[in-house]
Image 1: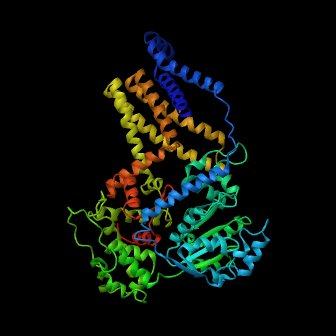
Image 2: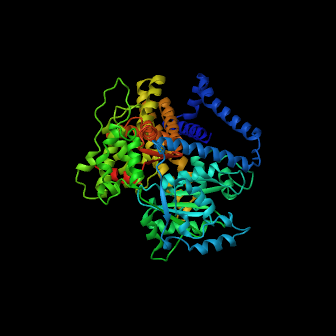
Image 3: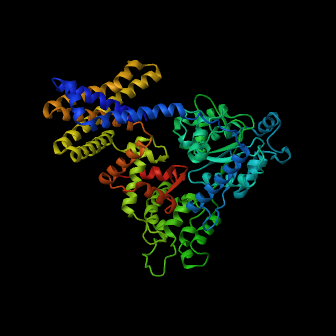
Length: 640
């Protein structure tokens, strides 16, 4: 409504001003014209009357804001638990975590200097208000008792750790994220519906901006993104929405993945921020690579641990477990496809580069995806699948070289045409697009792993967006003017709209700068000046254009040109602040990237397919990430 009022108001003022500047006896002429052409009155005064009357009626008759009724948080928590369960069951299927079967992940207690002393954990749990969160009779006698594997993670966290605070450490690709999802599923399956059983929700720490958000603010924002239903109002006064209400009531158990994916300089600060934010008896789980976590604890500013937390460290996959996994995925022992792995299996469990690379769930997943043949329709003749002996025959200098080889071969394997769901994009285009996205995240997003759809707008220069807006406005207004009044009017209207777009962008930049200054107390102009600049730039521009057009083409051209300028300027200024403009900017960006960079025209369909069908990406809410941060780093080093 404000945008419409701005456009109409500016149009009328500019039309009258342009006409006054170009006529020797303006008002008598205008009255004569209105008498001879009464439809002008209807076209100008009528809409104004309708808009004014409608606004007045709306202000008088609009109902008072509805009072948000209190909600049943128990019911909301149950609904959230169901949604989380379905979300991660679907994600596990996409990632093929349980195909051919769950890969066992084992762990031991982490080194003593990485966690609180065990007696301290027990004393802290006893000292918490209303006693410890669990049953002391089930607690482990010491940290060594935390050792276990796979499905035991739920028992370790819920029963054995006195404080129900746990740090999961491991090498790259060791299975930290997999173990977190298994813990999440166990906690949801064993929930009793009691308020003491919070809903586990997995969050990616890489999106936490510690400079601008507290932990609770960030968690609330992520809940709204991942589960939009939690944006609904909770009560009239206490909480802004359901997400905040659940957090304030202690109904969320945060499982925080990827502490190491934050910038290195923020690791220790993040741990300290967690300590400051955690309430007594607040359970929490944090996953991180072992080396960055150790470095964070020995920060020059002082040692900092996660308060009240035990720690476990994941172990390499055992040789027999890895061998059985590769053979089962190939069709089972003694099958011709399984026997292809004999040379590689001989290296498992050794210190060779191949043995080290295939000691993690990530390495095993990549190897089986690349080298195990997949079933094909009987009518399809597929090319032979690469042989695993390539890992044996190539002289890899170290583990990193093997990982690089696997990452490089992963895209061709994922985008082969001979599979149940053939891709719409070639291997070359897919590789090119993933390299571009990885380089974009490295150069313009400081290497963060989160790829939101709207980020793509920043992948092209700002002037491209503005040029597209100017051309679109010029063409639209030009065609409308030509159809209504002829070619001369059409050209004039198109030029006026293009010029108004440029002026609108210029004015918006000035307003942005002024608002930023007012917000941070560094304003060089006052709020009153901003109120003058916004309409003033449109009025002056329309006046000048109306004068020039009136001199060149007469009164009618002057009036209509001023109106055109005012409308185009108002729309340009207003549209940039509309939420939907992000989608327009995204459409401009993806078109530019498709033409200049060779990325897919339907980029969102490509990303969805890469997640659901190829296993290249993972998804949490509306954010995509590469399947593993090391895959992103590998691609970011390639040449586009």
